[in-house]
Amino acid sequence: MFKSRVFLRSVTVFAIATTLVSVVPAQVSAAVGVSVSKTEKVADLEVVSIKLANVPAGQGVYISQCFKPTLGQRAATGLICNGSVTETGTMIWATADAQRGSQSAAGELVLMLRSSFSKVDSAGVSKTYNCGVANCSLFVYRDHRGITDTALDTVVPIKFLPSQDVALTSLGLKKDGATYKAGSSVAMSAGKLVTTKKMAVVVSSDETRSICTTTGTSSFTIKFKKPGICKVTLVADGSSKFDQMIKTLTYIVK
Image (cartoon, rainbow, N blue to C red; front, side):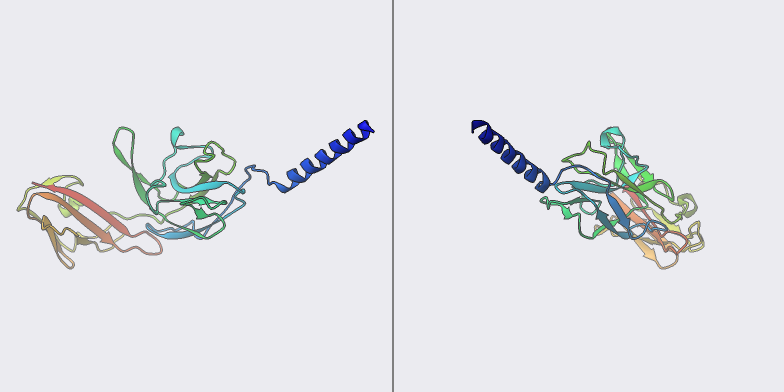
């Protein structure tokens, strides 16, 4: 009789354990699906739509625009990405368990892409990374709750439109970060304000402290009026074949 009770108890415990195992989902990483609305001929500042699939229950991922990322790579091993989780709009944190501050991994996600971005290294030096048609990708990887888990790592290459530029020396401008004397000016003719793709360049400044001003419609003049920091922007339209140009220059006026 005693042996029968022990046997029945063992069977009951086994049945309960089996039931629990079948009900509780396993927290095992699996391949994540990534769908992006546009991955080729992407323009600078273009916003793309991203959809995820198969993000395991209880887990989350980061989605970043990174420079030549490889599977398994992290910041500690040289991963270079635009922005950070604390910089709004530069990356996405999506979770399957509605973590506070995250977006739903089941919903539509959007991210603004940059044809180039800058990062400051450990030595405090800023470096610009140009994406072009082959250097950047969207990188999906586990969030901080499982950062060493590489099972969800996914790389989606992003091909940007070819860029255009304008030579500052041909405009009579100094290089970015140079110094100008207060009271000096630079005049640029319409014939020289043309990019490498033959697009017209518009010169402007949003300076509100009268440190510098820009005047003109096709030809432009920059006047450096008083000491301070002067920011000037050179803009040219893009097309279906090449990207727009947005070039910001910072000058020190003394």
